[in-house]
Image 1 (spheres, rainbow, N blue to C red):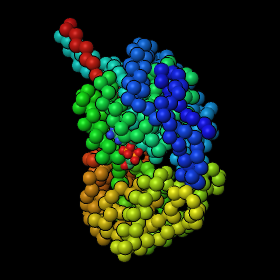
Image 2 (image 1 turned 90 degrees about the vertical axis):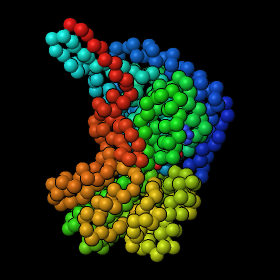
Image 3 (image 1 turned 120 degrees about the vertical axis):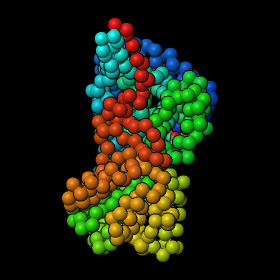
Image 4 (image 1 turned 90 degrees about the horizontal axis):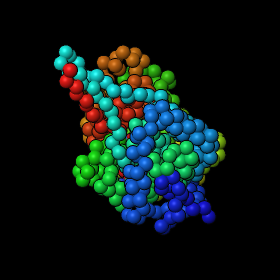
Length: 469
Ligand code: NAD
């Protein structure tokens, strides 16, 4: 059985201890993952600290060239890594699955390599000239979740190293293998120590974020862990980027042609079996359009093949882990016992964490499936009569990652858009992120943004040089 290894200072290290990783589609063993201890966390941070100085001193062009070579490595190994993602995380190879995740990894590497943050003259008169420089922060702790393990790690790693920081990445304990392999491969072109990994559960994440040499924390995960990250950051006064959970509302405006939008609504909700931070998690539909929306979504859901994502014809895989599987089941059974209209679609294999695609009607705000982040393939569809009530419902929860409005006349949706309390409000699309467009949450979905120029700024500190003329 293969044992996967952490990369420290450019070298693969033999694990202190290991645990076994299983395929969520069939329970088969995928190999052993390493488990770091406190000493290994310290070695990883020290490696990053040592490497960071010379990395930051390299010219901008050199760093950009190295990152473009990282993109090439990702591209060359995308079939291998996509297969590992499918076996470990569960999302299918096909459709918006693991090959799609690898394309995103390449794009989110190439774009930061193409961007610049040159010094900016922020003020000048006859007496003075003030220039703002963006300098690296130092060592970045990157803590990733299990839903899009490689893509989210890339979102954290690439802007950080582009701007001259070094990184210690901790993948989720549920999905370490593909990430470790990606890091091993891209270390072929990175100077030793610029990108290191440690592995293990939240206790190792906690040791990393509390380490005295950490200068910035990039965190993507749940709100409850996010609060612990904030506490950890107090130790070093490290700035943080917090990408937390969402409970995104989508509002279909009255009279919208449902046929035109049904496919995008479906994938907006069921991408990665709903295990996506910015998936549609509550769908608000005008009472006159409710039956049409139910019928269109049901028709799409009933055509989807659920199964092991290594099969090219499968578009819907299993949930990633038992904890998540049980949580979604619990929310659906709560809806069933409350008398909601629960409609389940798709033939589900006997083994693995598979669930039918589930549409839940006759449900209201205040019920668990609406108010709690399900992070799974069960979509509550809520009727509204007055559009103002739907806006109020959309804004009624603490989460504020994304939201969307769906309309035949986008101009009408645009008038409403800024009233929705979310980091991104999409019109006639949902979750349509782009490496040039800042992405981040409002309210309890976190703070700080990733992507584009704003994302690069977030992994730097400002240094003003003020000259008396
Ligand atoms: P999680 O918070 O359980 O774990 C995320 C990571 O944090 C893991 O690597 C975990 O080991 C680590 N961790 C746990 N406790 C820690 C601690 N005390 N200190 C440091 N690290 C610790 O989240 P998850 O279950 O892996 O991911 C699902 C959640 O992530 C959902 O709520 C989802 O909405 C959210 N998410 C948000 C985004 C976004 O961009 N906003 C993207 C993906 C997922």
